[in-house]
Every structure is written in structure tokens, then in C-alpha cells.
Image (tube, rainbow, N blue to C red; front, side, top):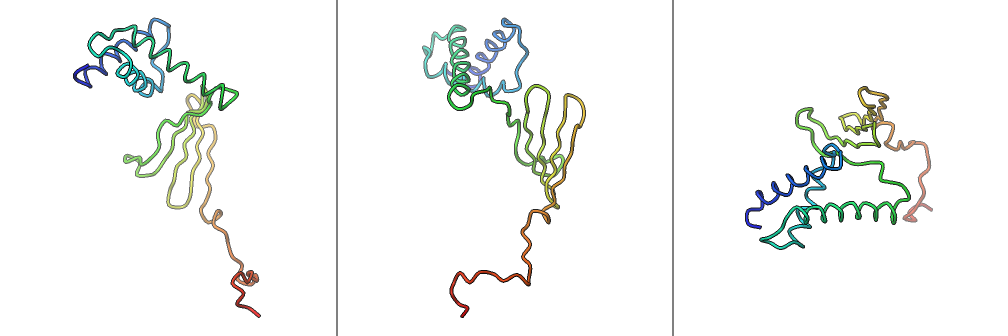
Length: 154
């Protein structure tokens, strides 16, 4: 299979052809699918004589794997998909983006004061909620008697 980058590009070209043949657009999790298929073809196909049929079989295996996930762990298709998580350098903040079903995106954003949860529909912000860290932190009432767990009080 030689050059890994070239191999993966060839697999991707065949995979995109499969998408077109079954009438679907490039899915949002294309890279995840491509990684699975490229690894499957590399592990199972002839290293010199692999072909589009091997990519088709690997794609079928990926679909079967998704069915197993639905059938064994969850009675319904997986609704939430984490799109990205980590530092957003452009906005200078930590955030998580979650794709929710067909129409929604949920953003969990960390700022200095707490957290922001934004929910977007197909085009617009639907709801936003702020959770302040001050509200999360447990307040200890100075007058409240704390339990003597060490047995130091008599």
C-alpha cells in the first residue's frame, strides 16, 4: 500500500464515489468514517491488489458497527455527536460543540465567570443560558456547626 497519505487519498476518492452512488452528501463525520475504512482496508485487503470493492466492504463494516452500537448499547440511533472539544484560539476560550439530531447544535462554553450553554437551530440561536461559578460553589455558613469527623470536640 506504499505511501500512507496517497493510499488514504485513494480510499477517500472511492468513498466519496460511494456517497454519490447512494445519493448522499458528504456526512459531517466523514473523517471518522474515512479513518475506519482506511484502517479496515489496510488490515484486511491485499496490500498490492486492493480495489474499490474492498472500500465498499469496509464501508459496509462501518455501517454494521453503527448498527451494533444502536442494538446493544442504545435502543435508538445515537442522537448526540461531539463535533469538537477544546481550546478555540480565535475566540480564546474552552468550548464543546455537540451536534444534536438533524437540526441543532449545542455549545458549552467556559469563561472566567462560569459556563454558557447556547443552543442553535438550523440558522439561529434558539436559547442561551449562563451558569455562574458563584452559584455552583458550595457556600459554607460560618454559623453552621460542622460535624466532628476527627473526634476532636468533647
